[in-house]
Length: 207
View 1 (spheres, rainbow, N blue to C red):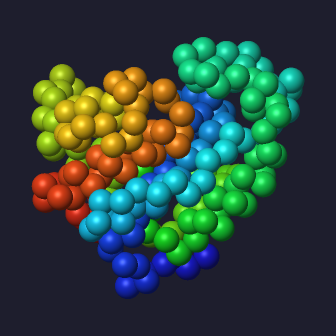
View 2 (view 1 turned 180 degrees about the vertical axis):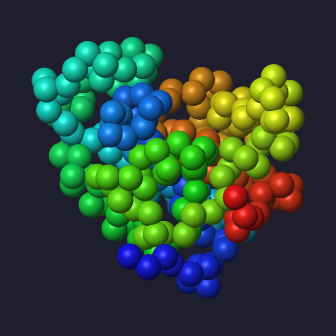
């Protein structure tokens, strides 16, 4: 599939996505179990919820690695929610339709997109225009010293960046990140808006 062109997009409308998964290793060992998408009018500072769904799988066939994933131990997500959710394939089709030919980003593009949505079975690489990673922009603002060789600053966690950069609590988390996809997408959206307003976020900045 041919990649979409930068000229196809208005810079002021960006879709922000977030995923929750069974682990950090990426596909195919891990799978997406929750996805949320917002639409951001970056010039007006408006955020609109677009899509949210748990993905359905036959969890009875999962091994202990997936069944005991961090997401099920530390959030309100349960295996029963995954068991009873719409089939994963249907959610993938919905997401593909929503994001087609759109400008899209995330808080940690390297994780959400490059470890999952660009790979099988999602295969979304080239179907939308990837914007600059919100996390990378926040890294240069938060300036948390890194102990890793070759990296000046470490990547801030989403809740840290949101709390330290965004005025008030427009995402309505009340001081607690719940690690659900739509809520995290909202946090990332308002963070992107604030970074854009301060001149620290450029959607088309080269990765």
